[in-house]
Image 1 (cartoon, rainbow, N blue to C red):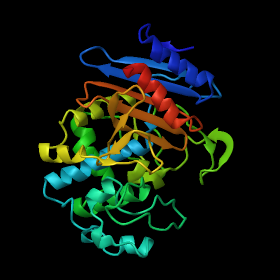
Image 2: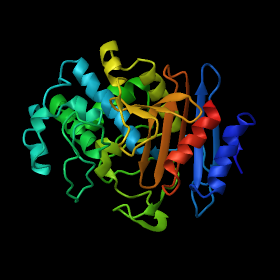
Image 3: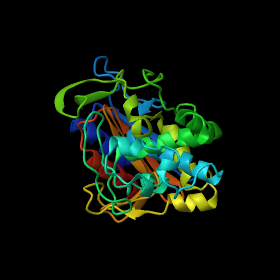
Image 4: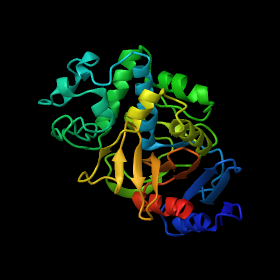
Length: 333
C-alpha cells in the first residue's frame, strides 16, 4: 500500500506498479513544482525482514548523480582560478593516466574532456584492464575513470579532500545536512532504507542480498555519495537555477555533447556532470541518475529548476531506464 497524498494519481500508480512488478523492494518519490508544497510518495518496504515501509528523510546512495556534485566543484575551482578547464591532466597528475592506461595521450586530456566523457579513456572496473576507448575529444564514452581522475585533480588543485570541497562549495552553503561523500568504511546515516542487490561485487547476477553495510568507497567521485530526496531537490534547484556557479561556468556546465552510438541513455546529451534527456513524450529534462549496488536514484527537472522529481529505489535489479521513463512521464507527461 502506498504512503502518498491523494493527488498525482498517475505517479501514485507508477510507484505501486514498480513494487508490484518486482522492480525493487520499495520506492520513494518527491516532487517540487513552483511554490506548491512538496509532494512525497512511497510504496513498498525499507526493510524486507521487518516490513518497515519506506518514508521521508531516508539517506540512500545516489550513485552516478555524484558526478553533478563533482562537476560543480571542478567548475567552482576554475571560477576561482585554481585550475584551467583546458589544461592537460598532467598539470596535476603527472604520470598517473599513463601508468594505468599505457598508450593514452594524457597531454591531450583535460578536465573538460573528463567531465563530458570524451577523454578517450575506458569505463574500467577496479582490477580489470581495458583498452583505451578512443582519442581525446573524439566521442562520448561514459566512464567512471573520468570522474575519479577529476576527483584527484580537485584534491591536487585545492589542497584538500574531495569530500571537504563538496561540503564547502555545495552541501554547507545549501544546508544539505544529509549529503556527504562517505570515507572508506563509513556507513549510511540514520534514517535509511536497507539496500538490496541482485549482483555480486563484480556485477554478476547472484541471489538477492543485503548490501547496506557494504564498503562502496571505490565508487568515490564517480558514484560514492549519499543524500536524501529533500537535499537533492535543493541541490538540483540551485544548480539548474544558476545559484552555484558564475554565469561563465554555468554556461560551460550546460554545454553538451551528443551521446548517440555509445549505448547509453536514449535521447541524452551530456554536459559537465549533468545531462539532458528527451523522453518519448517529447519533454526534455535536466539532471541525472545513479545506479550503484543496492540503489537506483533519479533526479531531473525542467531547465529552470522550478519543477523537478527525485526518486530512489532501494534495490538494483529493476529496469533502470524503464523505471526512469515511467516515473518522469507520469509527472511531466
